[in-house]
Image 1: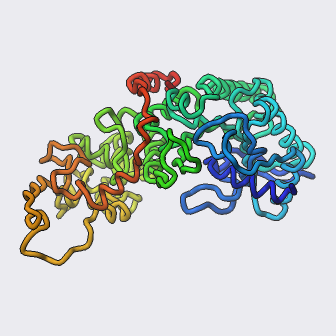
Image 2 (image 1 turned 90 degrees about the vertical axis):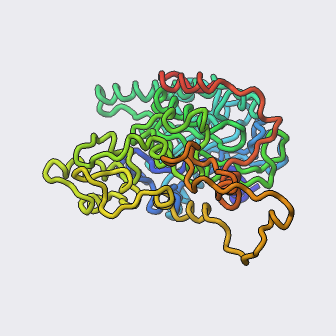
Image 3 (image 1 turned 30 degrees about the vertical axis):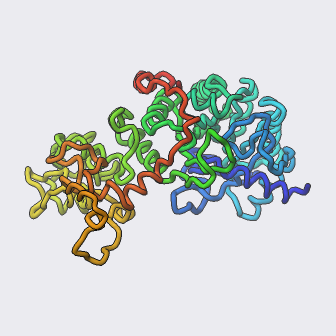
Amino acid sequence: MDVMEKLEILTASAKYDVACTSSGSSRKGSAGGMGNTTSMGICHSFAADGRCISLLKVLMTNRCVFDCAYCVNRRSNHTRRATFTPEEIADVTMQFYRRNYIEGLFLSSGILRNPDYTTEQMIAALELLRHVHRFGGYIHVKAIPGTDERLLSRLGLLADRMSVNIELPSQASLGRLAPDKSKDSILKPMGLIQARIRENRHDLVRYNHAPRYAPAGQSTQIIVGATPDTDQRILALTEGLYRKYGLKRVFYSAYTPVVEHSLLPALDTKPPLLREHRLYQADWLLRFYGFRAGELLDESAPNFNPLLDPKCSWALRNRALFPVEANTAPYEMLLRVPGIGVRSAQRIVKARRAVSLDFAALKKLGVVLKRAQFFLTCRGRMLEGLKVSDHTLLRSLMSGQELAAFREPQAEQLSFFSEAEAAGLPEPAAPADLFPGGPNSSRPLGEAAAGGPAAGGPAAARAESAYPPIPEAASGTADSIDALAQEASSGRTAYV
């Protein structure tokens, strides 16, 4: 099998790993060397969804001794297999770089023989790149669960970023779908990488030329939609990982059915892309807006609303806290106003020291008034002429795509008799209001009145597609979500 054939197989096998992002590290090119990396990103262009598109994302091998049910490369799956040698990985990377196809390398692997042997092969490939070819570009490498600590220490000195994929958000799901893995084999390398990064920071203070260990930090990936785990469980786990292990990013991957299995969604199930998007939005709120997982989701609402982003949903559930005065509200509260981001909140705090702000000034500072106008006052007054109703509020908070999903189907020919009446059925009750969860409604947002728009039609269909059903056999015994949230808030490992 030639190198190009291997490349075709192993790049296709690597496409389900979600880790293409800006590098987060900086390294200048050196005389006689090749390549460099900057903290602003490793490539010159990004995909429409913001992901970096110029990494060579490839597996060392798609042969694997593990039999994870969700993985296309599992031991029992019948697929074409290939393995790169360290020399081939280094040569392909350099050839792609010289042709300006890529700016860096993302290297993962199936488990060949055992975790230690696989890691040794990856180290050999990276040593060729760094020491022989003197490649200074960005390298992201996947650490294999169960690898010896000494090998992980060597691997981190060659890579910019390391990651250990959790994949499944609970021990119960891991036991059902990936019996060869355990939470200890996953979390132990995370702890080791974090400890080595901390040690390296002290070394760099004392020794100016000390080698850097994973300067761009570590990350992980969680599969969404392969198990019945709720968004609440996933978000609580994410919060715990950020707190305890200092992760740079948690990536979410909407599960794409690629293998037939009784414990997994059917092959014709669409990937829950909207659910993945909502988790990324909530992740951003955790990292930059001061939210906690328990504020965004709870047992009464364990999954995100498919029609509204998490920040808007939180604001609607806490309408008693609004409106806030733009000229006096603390920075932390401004961040919680829909339509105000980190930069615009910083601009407001800075500008109001000199002048009293009105709505025109807020718009110039970057505030999205279409959303923020319902939650702000300026000089003690709401925006002049603003009419606050559930209809107006909902339409303003939803994006164009969300609004299109919420709208009813096209109008049909009028008839003197309804379909229910013609069939001899009782007429459905009229909806109490279009916007459940409003000030005149006791129902939470997303729960439709009988006959209301959310009770059927496009909005309900989109909600169901965002959270496709999981086979009953996969449900098992649910772990305690209280324990998960408690561990996240206390800083312990939120993985049960």
